[in-house]
Length: 277
Ligand SMILES: Nc1ncnc2c1ncn2[C@@H]1O[C@H](COP(=O)(O)OP(=O)(O)OP(=O)(O)O)[C@@H](O)[C@H]1O
Ligand SMILES: [Mg+2]
Image (cartoon, rainbow, N blue to C red; front, side, top):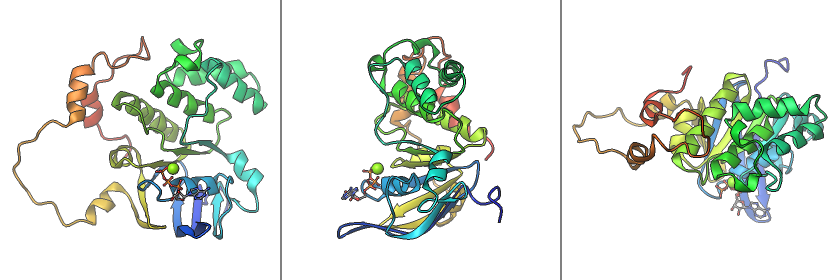
């Protein structure tokens, strides 16, 4: 199997314990190149532990894992050269402006023309208008977008997003989802962790559920739905969800942090299935 054809991420028999607490008890999954893979699990299920092992921040007790064809234990430097990690808590510098944060990362990565790289990413993440403002003045959604933008400096083929939308309002979540979809559309492999079922449903090509140390299901949304008995036809009055109500009220003015950007049509967004699936 050539590196180009191997899955972007391959995890086999991964085990990890913190002292007596066995968090991972034999985790297996593959992530195809250019796809979005969602690792679902409740608090403490071990999602961050998996991501940290794949990002070479933590060593597994047993099992193997490779990223972009490189073994995480034996070829850590090559793995680190292939990935970026956007951790569970935003890692942006508050004192710097959004643009300065991006230029800093581009300089650290020794890339040519850091200013142009920063400006391109600011545009892609609808942050151009806020580029010259200190990050301390950004909303949570803007910080998250900047954080993801920073992880894209240098175009890593694989990116890990650990709970990219936890704590964001519905509008900001949709903006992050759009950004993630755009990434995968460009061929980047995305592994994201989430506790939100709807996030996995909206975004992911494949969804795996981590529970009691193992992957208990792994499939496309359609495959996961087939695990349940066929739907029965019932006639019920459909009540709007709280999200429908939220968007009906704030939808037209909800794009508060990106002046100049077209307001989202939330109903359209909710009704449109993700592209290419
Ligand atoms: N460094 C550590 N030392 C001891 N226990 C740890 C350590 N890191 C994580 N744990 C424990 O391992 C378990 C899994 O943690 P992990 O952070 O991987 O879960 P998670 O699925 O990311 O949870 P969350 O959704 O809350 O982020 C938890 O019970 C946690 O308390
Ligand atoms: Mg976590």
